[in-house]
Image (cartoon, rainbow, N blue to C red; front, top):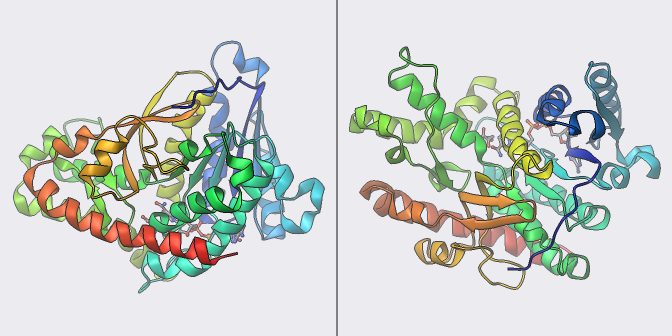
Length: 373
Ligand SMILES: NC(=O)C1=CN([C@@H]2O[C@H](COP(=O)(O)OP(=O)(O)OC[C@H]3O[C@@H](n4cnc5c(N)ncnc54)[C@H](O)[C@@H]3O)[C@@H](O)[C@H]2O)C=CC1
Ligand SMILES: O=C([O-])CC(=O)C(=O)O
């Protein structure tokens, strides 16, 4: 495993691409109000915190950034758009970023699947990938992709970095720091489980790992891993699995043409980003987190400890959301034992279905990335 020591900088910069949208605005609000609470000890006074907001909609992003900048926290806010010229374009948004979060792209309308978003959002993500390759320090940045379909767009980014930008990415280990955000599935699984069992007896939220991908049957909520699910009947358990797998549709339907999940997603993305920020700030040496990422590095070797065994268990599906240990350098190990801890239905029914669908999504992403110049 290549090892590089990344020096801690004198500040923390988070860049949000697509920050004027439904998720982007709510997420930026959470970052603006909460970032300083992640500082510890001497860092509280010495570290500079900045939030760089980019969107293709200049008017909207200027308004959002000005509005946020009035909030009484020490987080500096800047607005960036293609129309703002080089001094406030995407380059200055991404320059020296520690974390780049991407909610740029079209959301679903009723009747659409996430795959229907692929053509338009893949072009957006490919374009943003080029900007990241050009402007970010690829030896340190973490990239978190929210835009849908996550299952295919993370492979698009991975493939484009590996092929179009091979000169820049070589030796940086960036592939160990590019992830799709599937945290909302975990947030939903906990919420929905608590609604069914013991709701009134505790305020503690149950934790349910969710692995696989982020769309329908590629989402595998592992209720077997939470002891509360012993209280569930088979019907209740099947209902919960389906509700997590199609939680996105529930919101799309309720919003009735006005988009998909934004507030719950912003919450989930903030929770996800917070883990990475804790590692970047040195509050902890490593985090245990579940993200959608590549199991192979740019040379085609298993990306981290445990990846080879996981690849064997998932029919060589090269991208998978799985519990992983991440340090400042990126993913260090993936927990392949999660598969052996599944119960019979999860392992024999849900996993094969997930893997066959996920492999098609990944292949779509890679085919698109090959065709796009
Ligand atoms: N990973 C997940 O769990 C979830 C993912 N999503 C996805 O997140 C994406 C965003 O959703 P919303 O915020 O609701 O959409 P939205 O339409 O409210 O916001 C999208 C923003 O992206 C901007 N944008 C478009 N092209 C851009 C580009 N090339 N560069 C920068 N900005 C660009 C738009 O101007 C807009 O402000 C959708 O693809 C949606 O499906 C939504 C919920 C959950
Ligand atoms: O369903 C959608 O289109 C948005 C999404 O990914 C989710 O809410 O999980």
